[in-house]
Length: 359
Image 1 (cartoon, rainbow, N blue to C red):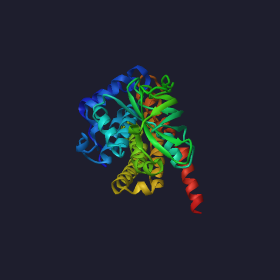
Image 2: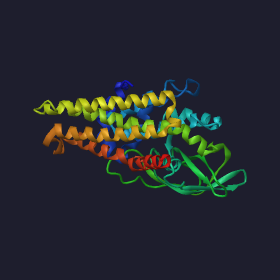
Image 3: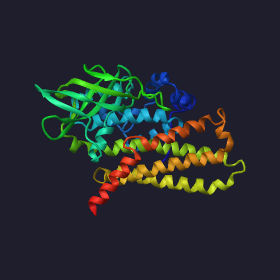
């Protein structure tokens, strides 16, 4: 994949807004409209569905380009665009038809509440939302402790739900105004604060069949997992590229010894990006998720090494509040990469279980 150019106006705004997006909850309202105005949500969406066409790798590169300026912006981009991807893969064409026009234009926020579901699919935990049958619909109870892009009063959210009376699970779309749905106050994060990240509690939320995204979560989730994780990888790619570039710029000041490790790390990053693109293009990740897990883990390691090299290249200036502000933000951003669900620990646990099963 080739690094994608962003709309110059969006690039300039993100560069200026990055400190606010990291530190100020109140800046969240600016972000979604800015991203939508640049057309980034239409990438990889078929023209017949109102999009600009293209491939999933185009979305990854766009998320990387945004994340190079601000991981908070990349995080919101990931959540919103992943929810769009769910609708594109849903047999519920009426639901997609209702929501996609406003989602692609940023008039409503889309949130992927399927982090729990992805862990469930990997055998790491049970589903946290259950359903009981009521007429031709369901009543839902449970909680989602961490969901991003929950614009107050104006979001749609995907959730995986376990049947309360029989085995199996399905996937639904919930809305901010649903009776019994409670959005918490924003979580008190140490960074990425302008991302509308909160918890959701469900108490008897009524869902009709026209809000079901997929009837069988076990069949449907593997089809969307490659995009879910690959779009996450875009965040790591963008942050790593920016840290490597910043380290290279700083290394000229008597720190030429870092040139070789920076070049080696950049080459390693390109190798992983190429493997990600090839797996997405071939569709291999749907049947071979472990390969994607390993790429996600490798990219997180690259991010950690990149910000470490940036610190070494910058020296003591990185520890001064004003000249080191951008580095300090990237350091916090890098600390988030290993804990994005599924976390590195969870991915490594899944890979270890797979190895034990094979043995």
